[in-house]
Image (cartoon, rainbow, N blue to C red; front, side, top):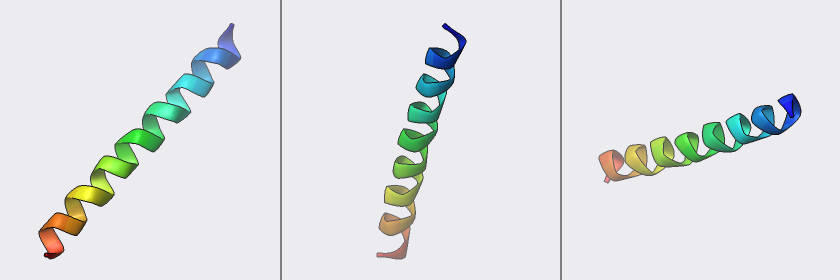
Length: 29
């Protein structure tokens, strides 16, 4: 069970990173 929660956290972290990258690109434009 613990490993499943860790995997989910990694997915959330990836999603947040993608959102940050999109925000940075918009700022650069």
